[in-house]
Image 1 (cartoon, rainbow over the protein chains, first blue to last red):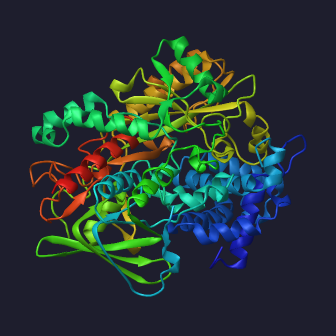
Image 2: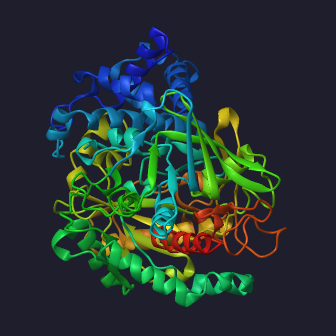
Length: 128
Length: 498
């Protein structure tokens, strides 16, 4: 994504990897196993301003919000894999619309990335 | 089809014609074809590219980048915020819609005429019917055959039957459809009779010129007369089109009012009365594979509640959209992806009473204010309840209403039946999207209450016409492509006569 600082990209990747993790018995490969560089290039060139803003806000807010959240008290990148999962589920069900929307935005982007990959599509039984 | 790509226009470029048409979607294409056939020298300017079907992306993301305006992420800000879905390509939204074809319902037409009898001079019922007959022949509009419907459409028929709701296969503008389920990504085999395959090539055969990737910036007008347009090509060249007879706006109910605004033409309720069909979807887990992404993209509809302003359609898109609506996140979400093949997704669209407005926003982008009224939300609740019940009646084991603050998964039809009464009253609990946009340059005889006259002419600027759904006095409650084609054809006839 053009204009993103390297640590912002890392934060976003952390979120995406936690959103679609590799799991035994699951057809979907984890996002961590995929080469997302072509996807980011395409998204960077095409995303409208509001989507860029939403993604950046998601990266910042969802990275730092756990620091203020009872039961976590750490930034997202310092949470264990299980805590990341638990935190994201809590954020998805937040009473705050904005928080829910930010999680939903990253979820949609992670699906875009997953379903753009021919191997992932094949693994999920969708035409590659 | 011969199209001049704006990428190749790097220097100032001047064009002379009889009629300049802004937009190449159904409205622009129908007007262009009508006028070119009548012997006018027509130039069509389109902001988006002409994409060869062989290059259409198989995945939803690539298609959204290629063919959708703002990747489908233009947002109406209101309660709730909702994405506004439009195409941006030669052929406009016809390239990425479900090919659903509906005649203008007579009850809607009667409301228009009752509110403003002067409309009947142009929009008389017989003319509309006769023009629509021709459109149905031209575009091979016919009901979806069971052989290509696929399980999601056939299950909807079963569910509606069980509930005693009127339903039918959807009439679509397709030829030899194979049920690839890719209408919304652009048909890779050209079976969908979208405008870049039908009316635009016909207009070109009759002498029309199409400029793609050329964004019109303003309408040129002097002393109350429109004389052309100014545009910027993707290659950087300024394009000036001089139109001897007329300028026709056909850029959609979002872009047409913005263009008038940018041109200093601000007469009447410009950008007001914005109406649409907001909708949401419900998913159901079935015992057997459905593969929602296969079969006729949108091949079945339930019309039993249409007069209440509620209409149901089977939905189809690349699996990415279905996946993004699955419950959960992280490990739970990845597990849920295993069930994806057995999930069907159906949608409810509402003829909403809400009237929003469009005006210029930041950086030349539209500011869209639109939400749901209490009545609209009540229709949405009713729609979700009926969709859930239809899914159970069709054999679903689990229904996922997708509404925040209510059961994520429903396993008992009796619970689903309570949704209408118990479902959340907060619009933000619903995942809605807005399609079918109307009313921002409303047609009418009263110059104070309308932007264009009943004959599509602008009330204050001569030789300026508007042909798209922005002139519709209200929303229609049904998919508007055929109505847009019909009205734009009548608009073309008016200009040819003028």
